[in-house]
Amino acid sequence: MCAWTMLADSDLSPVYILPLILCALVMCYLQVRHTLRDWRKLGKCQKVIQHRPRGGGYGGVAVSSDGLLAVTDDGNKCIHLFRIDGALVRSIGKGMLGRALSGITFDLKGNVWVADTGSNKVLKLSQDGRLVQTIDHAGSKSDHFNHPTGVSVSPEGLVYICDRDNHRVTVHDEEGMFLFAFGSKGSGPGCFDVPWDVTFGSDGLVYVTDRWNSRVCVWSKEGSFQRDFTTKYAPAYIAATGDNHLLITSLGSYTVMVCTLGGQLIHEFGGRGSDPGKFNRPFEICVDDSGAVYVADSRNKRVQVF
Image 1 (cartoon, rainbow, N blue to C red):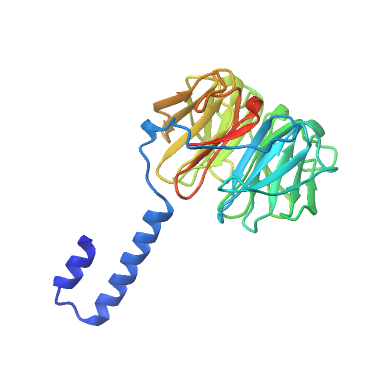
Image 2: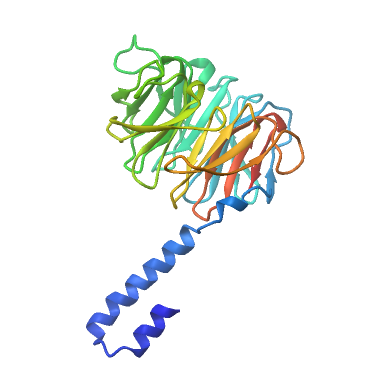
């Protein structure tokens, strides 16, 4: 409102006013698209999304830019696609996927990438269920994945995979071609002991959960180690918000940690249970453009929305 009042009261010529109006409209759009939240108040479940046919845990969850939710279902060996209101659109991947499914993400074209951990591969599927690509190795065909878990697509369209038991992150182009890898086994700077998941911060850096070192490691997108910080609990899955925060699940503590990009813990919520707001093994977590948070509550076989 202040911007419009200033323009109305100004004596600027129309040549200058039009660009200012366009700028103000863009700012309004961004504010709506990236709603700021008080992350210290996160914890009240707003909605539960669940597909009731007999199945296993919900491990992976991802949300697309156009409001489609992808959820892995171990028991049915498939991926459910939901609308944000919880309505099931379709299930894909049956006959292609194994039982131990982990991280999932959408790429810039709307394809779904999923880590089939038990089968040591990552698959790319179209939203109508066609198998588009399979990746099972890094630099050479003999350099096999060893239980990949997290998969995420950068703003530039590159695919980052946490090759868990090889203690590294591999980077691929949108067609799955291997580009480079970073990390090795250890506890020192630039090392991992079971890297679990990966996300991209609002600062342009790459954040990787280093599970058994109980920390998050920070890298450049080109694979240059920057820093790390310790987490209160052993971290599993991680999501970045648009306003410089990280949301991190912990399997052992049944909680979600909220941290700044610098690693300061500002809030945690959850705890073990089946009531809304409680978890039985919280797995992957994601946040949409409105600021809504989705947590795959694995053994409760549901997704909770906060």
